[in-house]
Length: 191
Ligand code: ADP
Ligand code: NI
Image 1 (cartoon, rainbow, N blue to C red):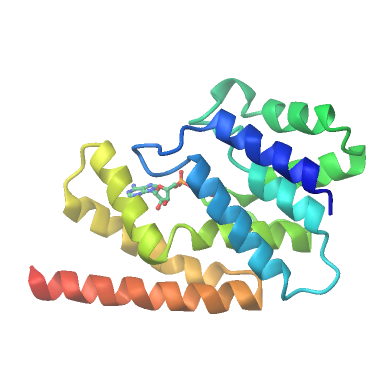
Image 2 (image 1 turned 45 degrees about the vertical axis):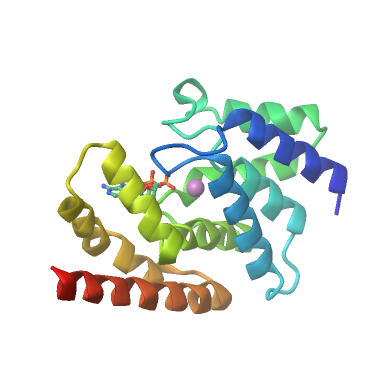
């Protein structure tokens, strides 16, 4: 594993994102959590490529439509970073395929095991305690009443567990899912 490459990628994401995005969605803290979740899942899977997983996790939001609309289609930021780091063309293609397929809204499943791992890692960050906080941060930023954000749990967040690709992803998702269910029960009791 090339630690200098990972250090450069981490420096790059801190340069791309503010430390804390008020909308709670796409910031360096989210990216770092996705990276760590992905490494944690990767440890349980033999033969997956840690370099591809690390690059895809760290670069997955640098061309997000909300973060960089002008490079969203081409993945220009991710490609430029990898080209500066002399990453081989087949890894660049693999990483870009993953980034194109992982978003929630896209409803796609990446073909590679590396992509499945990163998609699980990104989804884990939308559920559990962090997921609850992100949802309310998002809703507050959009000026929505809290009850509307509660709908988002039923529309999306409570379904993510059943979409996990890997056994370790599912195990971690179940813990976080149960925590959200408890939260919603408490919400009801207190309302
Ligand atoms: P991605 O860019 O990974 O596809 P989104 O932009 O859909 O993800 O979501 C980013 C974060 O914002 C997630 O934590 C998600 O739950 C939250 N979010 C997205 N839409 C809503 C919404 N309508 N209400 C509350 N939270 C939302
Ligand atoms: Ni993400």
